[in-house]
Length: 313
Image 1 (cartoon, one colour):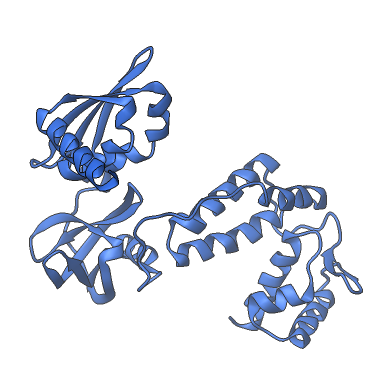
Image 2 (spheres, rainbow, N blue to C red; image 1 turned 90 degrees about the vertical axis):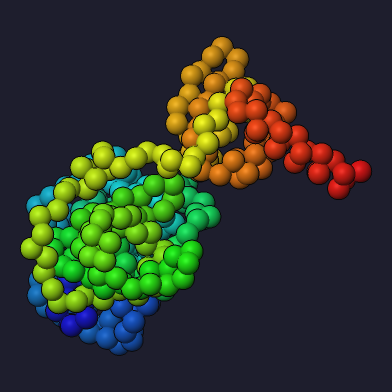
């Protein structure tokens, strides 16, 4: 980051909080305290009304604003919630980008609102996501999004159940489903559109080629794709309402299709991708549910429970 960009970023940082310590600025931009003091003096010489409180930090004179845009406190709280979610449910690159944007948003608030927002940060949290994440390349999503806009052709190494293969893809969009990000792309090898799970992309690079192919839109792809695979298993169960409300998130991992609420029980329909996995999940709440169909699921659950009983007896 050059000095001009750093000065601009420091000014936004100063506006994002009521009081900012010099060490906090030094840590964020990985510079020395002496550099921070020098940058602060430069901003003062440029006419920025910075107030220094010895032993406490720096603040901007009330009323000073850079952009002519203001957000309501409710809107900023919505941004704060989005930031918390992105911290745990996005790649590192996008999470850091959003944090930078949040500094700019908070810089527009008055001091009293800044303080209330800082207090609110401790009252909002998101549990760590227990699902796939691409630890090898944290900028996968933005690189794919950039390729969509530029119609660029990317070369990827992709991990499959049969091993790692390489292919050229032409991304048309991304979508998230059941905790996994998918890059919908035209594969030049298979000549078809495929969803590529980003956590399975081991490497990605720009080929320097621009696609001249006219692609379908992401919306068109999602509308046409089969919702369930041909080898999925239709399942119908009834669950006590007191338990059904706890399955809201889990049910989507097991092929949830629809449900019909009743006075005491909810009828749920699934297209289970794996009947064995479904039976194991069902056992966790079997005492508050009934299997309507298929009969094979009842047999699997009985066998599973008998195995468990033998192990604990």
